[in-house]
Image (cartoon, rainbow, N blue to C red):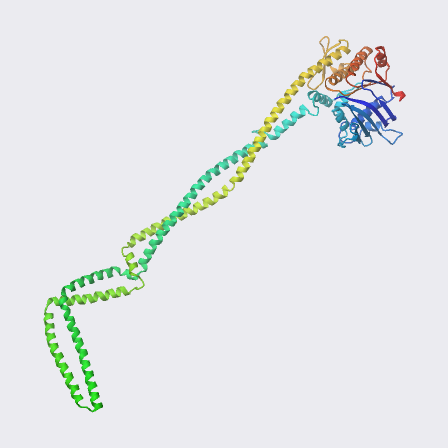
Amino acid sequence: MTVSIKKLYLTSFGQFENTSIDLESGFNLIYGKNESGKSTITSFIEGILYGFDEGSRVRHFNKKQEIYRPINSYKYAGYAIFSKDGVDYRISRNFDDGAYEIYDFSINEVMKVKESNLNYPGEFLLGLEYELYKNLITAFQRQETSENSRNKIREFLINKDDYNFSANDALNFLDNKLANIGTMRAYTKPYAKTINEIDELSKKILDLKSLRSSYYNDFKKLDKNRNNIEKKTRILKDLRKDRDAYRENIAYKNLEDEIKYQNELNYVNAELDKYKNYESYDEVKEVDTNKTSHIGFYILICLILVFLGIYTKQYYLFTLAIILPLISILIDKNSNISSSEDTLNYKRDEDYLEYMRLSKEKEKIEEILRVLQNQDKTKSHENIMTIKDLDINETENKIRKLENELESLNKINLDLEKKLASAEEKLQKEVDLTDRLHKLETNLKDMEEEIEAINIAKSYISEIMEDASKNSNNFESEVSQIINTISKGKYDKIFYDKEFNPQIIRDDGIKLDIDKLSTGFYDQLNFALKFSINEATLDNFLIFDDAFINYDLDRLRSALFYLLDESYNRQIIYFTCHKREEEILYSEAINYHRIYLEEL
């Protein structure tokens, strides 16, 4: 990147009013007596590029801004035309408020910029922040380098390919990133907290998986118990039905007696079958009974005949009413005599007596059976037969056993249901816990990848810094060569420590303290450093404001020759109040661009 100044136009700045200065790309010698405005022009260039806020990106009070405020004009502004890589830009600035404008001649448009960044024009054109501009682009008498500036220069040398990248800042940033991520021992940091939470979640999920397995087993056990309860309940219901049938059926209460008497009745009937011949006795008794009924019948006939005789006055009917009953009585009497004789014979027979006993026994049994059967007519014989073989004691034992088993199963199931309900509540969290675990594992993976990337980046940056350290040896060699040439071999070697403080070794090997060196040598050292850095890393213009005023003639000549050689590669703007430079250049017949401030 090559940057040069083509034109300066001081609208109103310091003692200059509407002053235009044209510069060329090579060596520009600007001559002016003391107080002629050399430093004013140098400050104008600085103000155009960075404003008067000394590197601050926002406006604040600055003494330099008041120094160059015009006395006889309300305007406080100007512009400069720069060339960057063949493209011309016009930068205009109002020094009152710091406002600026960058006009791109290649597209004839004003560039869009962040107006709040007052340093942007210089950063855009040169790629340098204000501190580096002051220490690398401009040089003046007894210019001191602050610790902050030395740090900036060291950073710049390390990151010369991209100054926007700071190795130390990058390492600090990466270290902070690592610190923010943390390690296993940093328990309050994300890395350790994530690992600990992953461990806790993994344990919880593992416990939940074990719980789920137990849940399935308990569920199967609950289902099995429910089936057993259902089966046992059916059996218990049947047993209770039999027991209740036993308890509630009144006929069955006398079932054994009924069976007993039925058996006895069967026995009596079987015995009576042996005495069928005596059944005629029963018929005789029946005849006696019939005779009694016949007498009544005869009386009734007599009464009817008498009534008819009286009514019809046919008196023979009276005779008939008397004769017919007498005849019937005589006939019945003969029959009774015959039956009585037979009866007496039967009574004398012991078998008949047994027959009579059995008959009475039969009647008694039949009466008992009728009573037993009529005690509960609602109970069917089928029900009775169902429970006739029932062992009530065994049934009661079975019922008690089943009731105990069911009570135990119901209690077990109640505990299982509570356990399953509690497990279900916990298992519902498994999905959320798993999602959280996956998220944490992803975060952990990202952190581990970030840690790995940070360590790789740190390693790479460290390599860059090591390379930069090697490159610094080249700068030291270049600076040493320039100093050796300018000092005519008086100083043999220059090197810089880690804080970028110069260390000087004389030709006799003695190490010198920087505070004991002459002002001229200090200026030479600054020149050598800036020249070496610019030659190796930058293509920007260089400004020298009476930077060699303390050089003797020989050292001045050597320094000028370095600048003249470098002017073929970059623009050199050299301010001086002496004629020595002009005389040296004239004696060597060197062509250069010359400007006299008194003639502006």
